[in-house]
Structure formats: structure tokens, C-alpha cells
Image (cartoon, rainbow, N blue to C red):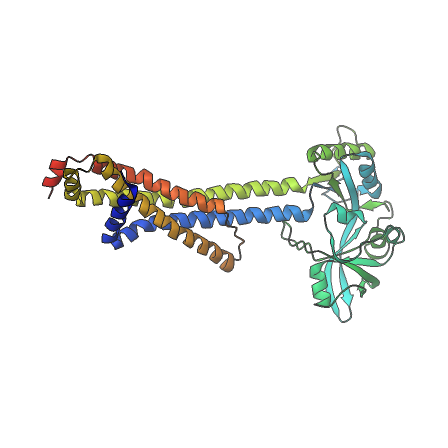
Length: 410
């Protein structure tokens, strides 16, 4: 059996009924295009989640103030500042798995520069905060240790805040007022984008922790060392869950909590939260691909239907070929090649539609899409498999025709 002549015969047979062949391929085209586009949407969502994980900082645990009980009433999270700078120092000192532990306080204030002003998040931090959050500087320099201990009036500014106050001009060395206190901008932060809760991480200004407490945000008179949060970065390759357990045990010990008492703090493993979202995105991708694959199955059924009709229409031709020496496997190969050719041509056109659809979704819906070569190969291979699977029965039926009966067929 020679494949090349069989392919020429198959293509010639398909060209006889161009409209019917085109309509038959339509199901495959839609199926392949839908699979590629839907997988691209899901892959884009996964990539976005991965970027959010990276923007938060790798191996990050956040310690927050917890709830307290007053007169038998349990108040909500953060109702009292229960963690302190000393807790951060103890975590970094006593837990070998921890690389840095950076305390911080947070508030909102109006920044004023000349005749412009902008309301933004103000965070009082230590120099270790940038290391904990994997947040390098775009320009300028970080805080020095003596600037933190001396409550210096210096600031690092986020990209969004810089854009709204300074536009395209360089903010380095400029003076801004935060609650009427002048601060010199010594550095700009690199862009991080939105986090998983939709907050703009670049709409922020960082100032030394001591400065924030003494001159901007204030502090509790009863707990002057208290902070709002501690960013704990675990060393690369270490077990995040184990570091979280050791942090919890240390804080319970330092806060003198009995075994029957609840934690007076909260631990949040942000990487786990976002990784859960990533798993959800994967499930969504598989679901979308499965739904789109139904179109391929429908297209395969259409191929089987048309091939059965073709066998019936060409019964006399089949009988004639058998009479002049064609074997059953030659007839089988001919019709099978016709079915696969329909699928492959439809698959190629479907790939083009899928790529175009992905770009259209990204442009009009402003939804990030990511087309992977594996998804193209999978969709194309599946379309070929559909042609073989659904084309085999009509081809087998044609190969088993009785030559005498086929010649008599009207």
C-alpha cells in the first residue's frame, strides 16, 4: 500500500464536495480553536497568580495582632496591638529557619508636594522590610540603621504615589509633607502591581519605624514598642510550615499564654493562600479545556456522518476498484486518510482561530492570556486522533463491501 497515491485520491475526493468538506471541518476548527483559547485564558490566570506570589515575597509569613477578650466579650482581629518590635527581634534571633523578621506599622495620610497632594498608605518599617518582601529599589538608596534609630525624616516612595505627585520628574531629593512633617525622598521602589486582593502595592510611602511612631502615626502609651505586623521571611529551601509552627510556639511562650488559651495573634502564610488560588486556576483551566473538547467530539461525529454518506455515494466506485485488484486494506487506507485529512486541515485552521481568539480576548476583555506550545500540540494531536477514531468505522465498512454487490449498487 502506497500512502502518497492514497493521499492524492483522498484530497481529490474531498475537493469534489468543497462545501460539504468545509462544513464537516467546521466542528474541528471550532473545537481546536476553543481548546487553545480556553487553555490560554486559564494559563494566563495561573501566570497572574504566580506573579502575585512573587510580588508578595517568597517564603513569607505575616504576623498580625490578634483578638483580645474584654469583660467576657471577644473583640475582633487587631482590636489591640499584641505584638511588638521585641517579638520580631526574638523571632529572627531564636528561630534558625527565619532569615529576617521586619516589624511595621501602617496608616493612611495625605502627602503634599507643592500645590499637589495625594492620599496614600504610610508604613513605618525597618531596613529588613525590603529584604523580607523581596522589594528592591528602582532608584536611590534604602534607610540606614542610624536613620531608623534616630527617627530621621526620610522616605521611600512607591511608583503610583510618585506618578501622582511628581509626574515624569525625578522625585529623589524632593521634600514632601506627611501630616505637616517634611520628609526627604531618598529612594523609589520598583513596581509590584496589585496583590491578590486588588490593592495597589505601589501606592505607598515607607518611612523609618521610629519616625512613624513618634511623628506621623503615633503609638500606644501603654505599649510603645507595639507594632501592627511582622513580616517573617523564611530561608530558601526551608519548610514554611515548620517555621510557622516554631513562630507560633515562640510567640505563645513570650506572651505567656496557657495551653487552654487562644492565640492573641494571627499568622498568615500568604504563599499558601495564593498557591491555593493557583490550584483553583489549574482546575478552571482543565474545566475550560474539557468543555472546549466537547466541540472536538461533536466535530468527530460530523466526520463519521459525512464519511458514512461518502461510502454510500461511492459504493460503485469501491466495487470497481476492488474488481481491478484493490485490496480491502487499500480501501480502508483511502477512506481513513480522507477522515484524517479533514481533521488535520481543520486542526491547522483551528490553531489560527485559537491564536486569534486568544489575542482578541486579551485585547477586548483585558484578560491576560498565555498560549503554550504544549496546548497547540495537544489540540492538533487530539484533532488527528478524532479523525482516526471517527473515520475508522466508515473506512472499515467500505473495506468490507462485497465487490459484486457494490457493482450492482444503484
